[in-house]
Amino acid sequence: MLLSRSNSILHFTKISQGGLSATLVDPKLIFSAALEWKASGLILFHNHPSGNLQASESNKKLTQKIVKSAELLEITILYHIIVGQNTYFSFADKHEL
Image 1 (spheres, rainbow, N blue to C red):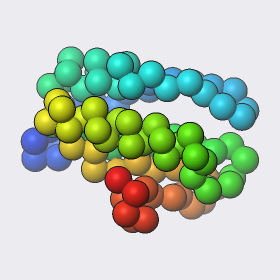
Image 2 (image 1 turned 135 degrees about the vertical axis):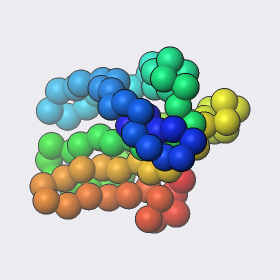
Image 3 (image 1 turned 180 degrees about the vertical axis):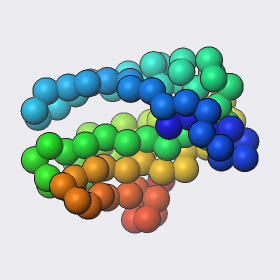
Image 4 (image 1 turned 135 degrees about the horizontal axis):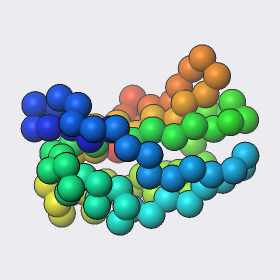
């Protein structure tokens, strides 16, 4: 989700679509969309089809890579949310952003 400076929604975009167990996410595609829409903030979402909301080590590493990159572009990552069956995990709520 791409956000304006006042956190209004500018645009929703799908960056990647994977299979049942994994997907590849290229941060360059995330920031390309953010720059195209002149976004000041981002909310990242992905799902775990298994229903397991535990953030994997690769989820954590990718999130930190995106957060560090966003800082250079003066873009705020407000949330990264893993969506499961009728529930969610928020990196921000767990102080992992």
